[in-house]
Amino acid sequence: MAGERILIVDDTPDNIKLLKAFLSHGDYDIITAADGEEALEKAFTETPDLVLLDLMLPKKSGLDVLKEIKEREPDMPVIVLTAYGSEETAVQTMRGGAEDYLINKPLRKDDVLNAVTKTLSKQDRPDNNYSSSRAYELLTEFERDLNNFIKSALESHYGDDWWEKGVPPYVRTKCEQRRTNAQLRKKVLMPLLYYSDFSFYVPIILYKDEQRGIDNWRNVFERFFVNIGWIKARLIELNHIRNDVAHTKPISELQFRKLELFIKEIREYMGESG
Image 1 (cartoon, one colour):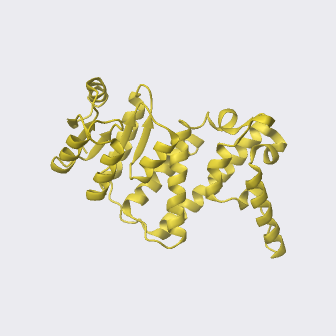
Image 2: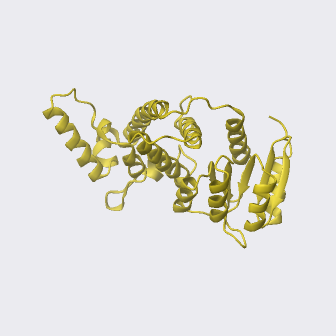
Image 3: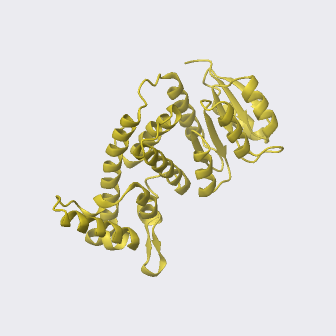
């Protein structure tokens, strides 16, 4: 849809100028704010279709701005764009309700345009089915494919020793215990990684043992994903949604949109169709 209104929040004029240039070929109505207080005022009076939010702001921090927007306008999409950040900050923003989190120095045009386009396209499309049962189906299918992807990536680097070398000891122990329990209950036995759960995937991807010369992120997974914060934040958020679904907690429309978007994005980087 043409004519979407985008609020750019940044206290650096050059950054605002750069983002405007990135978006100049789209038919967007651009409004700007230079601090956290102005950002909130314009978010609630100008009703933008999308907010591009820097974290380092005067008067009120970007995280506080994000929190207040989501409290008053939970369906207003916010993309955090910052030249500085950390894995912990990425997770905080995702849990705070951000649609996306991009750390780049400097910001790259393709990353910004892709994030904006994906987010606005989600707003345009009506979501008539965001039930917990549908979310469970999507997560189950994605977890199976992610499991296979992780096994394949580890196997390609470590060979036949991928299980011993590429999987953290406590994850191996847990999976082996679960497989033994399945055997005692006379269930059909599956490959060991099948007995992992969603919360294990981040530890596997980031597993590092300097004494053994193991660094899964650098040697195995870095070539697939944008950065550690990007994949960590998405998998942690998907795990939170999965826990809500598993405990029959109603899933919100925003959670379902995130679920679809994050699965699609991760699949693209895994080299699968979405």
